[in-house]
Image (cartoon, rainbow, N blue to C red; front, side):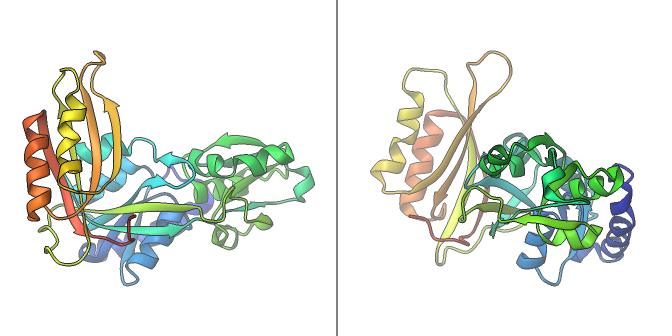
Length: 296
């Protein structure tokens, strides 16, 4: 808790106490109170007891240790792409994906002086990237910080009118800052996708629209990826996400994270996964869960 700025620590302590009293209702999130992940928890599960965690690793550990029943973790943003480190943390966490949630993202500039004095804006790199054009147009220097709402609390600590924070609008009221500007995001349809992670959970029933997420490593042979993915095309399975990242320093072993529309029990999906497995060194399903937003 001491890693949070001082203005956030009493709020974090109260939330931790409430979550620890009923861990079966606790939902871990990354960030300080007022962060987008906090907002997502409250909207996705209104009866939950949000548990603030300083880092994504801390949120995942809270679930693995039993201090929270689940975690709600952002994995991608419509403007700024993949959320950092999740492509490593998620596959290695040992947790399963049991759901998804989409949150429209809104940002405000908040500080302790007039906007014409602001020279720096601190926030999470994702938020800075999503407001890049707004900042550049006004000559404000972006400065990275681990969290959006935590940045607001840090501005209170610094007590410098030249330094403001970019955070969700509600953070200004939580930490007693003035709202200097609103609607900073570079696109009005700014959206972040979250996944719900749990220690265990049965796959969603094969009813209605469902998503399946998995990771796989292709064999290091020519056209391996083309062959591995061919089954999804021939069987008419919609793949909505495909990301790659390297394992080790050889640059020869590539692991992919993918989302598809469908259930492993669907004959077409089963055939596609079977063909994928044939051309892959490894394949692991991370979760099958209800679709929160239509694809395509």
